[in-house]
Structure formats: structure tokens, C-alpha cells
Length: 340
Image (cartoon, rainbow, N blue to C red; front, side):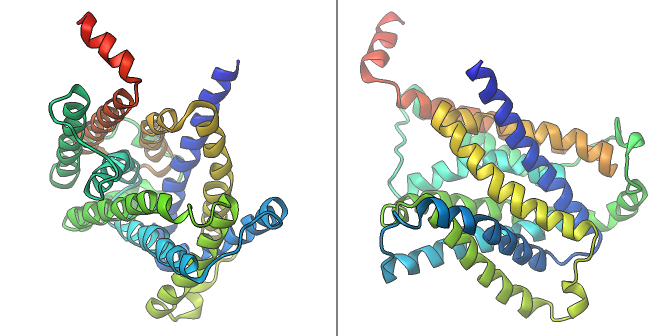
């Protein structure tokens, strides 16, 4: 029963992320400035997390040295503010499906960055090392396929869209074709910033182990940073107004559900089943996004998106398999090699 509960929770996590891609894309296509979107998202996430952080960790939190504060400031700027701002630009140029597909390359990018920093190792003469190399290669192939090959349109679900969105997508299709490669580049750059955040976070959190306060402080600093960037880009007060519309729904959803709810759910899954189990569920949000974007937004799915996404999934599982094999006890590996 506990195992089934873990499977249900990871499905909910990936469904929340899929809805984030859809709502963000819809908000941007309806004219919302992506920099303003990031500010509101981080501000709402901060307001949501502050009561929990104060209640659970304020009394037990260690003192925060100035040097550690500066590290957290730079970490939030690189891994959250820049990552989300660049992600928004990429999403405006591409689609929700591509955004979901590129998240599958995040573990591969993170591994590659950790390799450059000496945190990870790559032994090319072992099965695990070969699997990691295959994973990196598949990730590169997938990214290139997403960027340079669209192929025929697969309009198998777009005739049944719920929102009045399909004609707009068709009208914009030709205009967006020349910016698609640029959008793919921004998506990969966003995942690179996110990967750097994951790698460097391990060093910074050693100096401030209160995880909930650490996350809340990053969201707070990111909201200030994103406000400055948004104000520099857009000073028209009308663009900052939300109202009771899709803009308000999207920023509240991303601030509360993505930053707040998934933080707890992911922590629970990692504690119960481990980080690899959570990472292996990532392709679920691609599958959910493909069907939901076609049905709800009437988004046209291309063969290139499916093939590129499949290559990224292969790369993801290949790296994860190599990593899990390296973490096997040495005695088990020797026994396995002896039996072969």
C-alpha cells in the first residue's frame, strides 16, 4: 500500500508541473510579461512559505553569517531568478510540450556540471561510465532534434481542444518558426542555470542546514531580484495589473502549488523512495503535457518534438542507470561480474 501511495504522489507532482507549463504558456500567449510573471510567482511563493518556515524552523535555525547570505543571494539569482526569466523567454518562443521535454535533460546537465566541478566521476571502462556517456549523447541528440527538426504535424487531438486557442496557434505557427531554435536555446540555458543551482546548493546548504528557511530566503531574494529586472524591462503600470483572470490564476498556481506543495511532496518521496525514484518519474509530465496541451490549448504536436523528447528520456534513464549502478555495494558488483 505504501508503494502504491508513492506512485500516486509522483504522478501528482508531475501533473502539477505539467499544469505549470500549460498555465504559463497560456498566460504568456495572452499578453502577460514573463518578467512580471516571475516576480509575482516568487512573491506569492515567499508569502506562502514564510508562516511554515517561522513555525517549524525559526527557533532551531542557526545564525546566518554574512558570507553565507551572499552565497544564498548569488545562488537564488543564478538558479531561480535567471532560470525562470530565461525559461519564460523560451516558453514564449516555443510550446508547453517542448518545455516539458527539455526538463528530461536536467539530470544529464546536472551530472555534466557536477563532472566539471569534480563532484561526479566518469569511468569510461565500466558499464556505468558507458551508460552515462550514452545518456549525454542521447541528450545532445534530443536537444538537436527539438531545435532543428519539426517534421509533420500530429493533429490527433487538436480537433478536440477545450479552449478557443487552436486558430491562434495556427496563425502564429509560421511567425514562430524562425524563433523556434532561439527558444530551444533559452530552454536549455534555463535548465543549465537550474542544474548549476542543484549542484551548488549542496555546498551552500552545509553552512545553513535549515532547509525550509533556506528555501524561503531564496524565494524572498529572488522576488526582489526579479522585481528589479521586471521594473527595468516594463514600467507600464497596466502591464502589472492582474485582475480576476488567467494571469492571477497562473501566478498563484505557480507560487503556491509548484513552489509550496511540490516542495513538500518531493521531500516526502525522496525520504520514502529516494531521489532516483523521483527523477525517473520526470517523463510523466511530458506525457501529461502532450495530451493536455493538445486537448486544452489545441497545441499542434510535431514529430520532431516527440522524437526529441524520446531521446531525452533515453538519456535520462541511461544516466540514472549508470548512477544507480555506481552506488551499488562493491561486493554486489563483483558478484554480478563473476556470475557473468
